[in-house]
Amino acid sequence: MKPIRKSRNKSRDDNRRIPSLTPSPGTLGEGGGEGLRLSPLLAFAAHPDDIEFACGGIITLESRAGRAVHFAICSQGESASHGTPAVRRREATSAAKILGATAEFVKLDGDAHLELRTTHAIALARIIRRIKPAIVLAPTTVQNQHPDHWRLGTLVRDAARLARYGGVPELKSLPSHSISQLLFYASTCEAEPKDATPLLVDVSDPTIMDIWKRCMEVHKTQTSARKYVDLQFARARARGLGAGVEYAIALFSTDPLLFNDLSAISRGARGF
Ligand SMILES: [Zn+2]
Image (cartoon, rainbow, N blue to C red):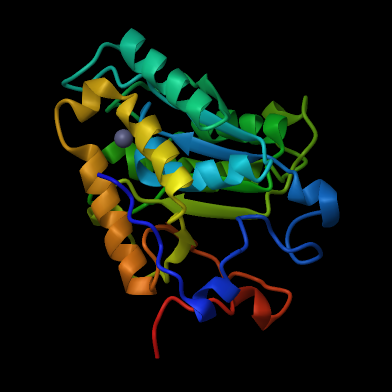
């Protein structure tokens, strides 16, 4: 599917440079300023393709803006109908490279066997302390989806808190770390929380769309079985058109968002 070039529209173009996921200095997280702007983005995935399909366009935007991006992939897709763990690992590694991200594989309970355990939350908190991200992405905790997705989202939410606590004995080898934002992504419509206002990121730029498409197509074992690329582009198209742009990807926050002033959110997603 070829991305449609955005039409010129002055009032929209005036605000075209929407903020990336970079928090405004002085409002979010520790320190503020340039150090915070360059803080890494850490994205957790239950399976090797989750991040790319759900929000690869956003990852592209962030890495292109100069932010270091790291993926923590918590299985090798070993329970999937298509693709061996070795092939899935290779696909995920190639996709991360296309996105300008680094990736590691984390051993928890394995694909389709993930359980909610405190030891897992601590293991994920250790990754947060090591990477020191400002922003963390995780799958939504909506339960009407793959059971690994909502369980991982729940574990990451807990991990983000444990990463901050100075007294957790298992984590004492690394300094505590407070993230700025935990944002959730949805791999499917069914995984989108109905009670949260989505945070839409404009990915209409054809370059961004091309990279997003490429990083999804690398997962050949999955895209040959189902039209996942079309599916994700259709979702982004519907989100975008509803907001007056060509393509947009939704993220979700379960917490209030803090802005320096209203100009940071002057770009509305609804035509009044
Ligand atoms: Zn998945």
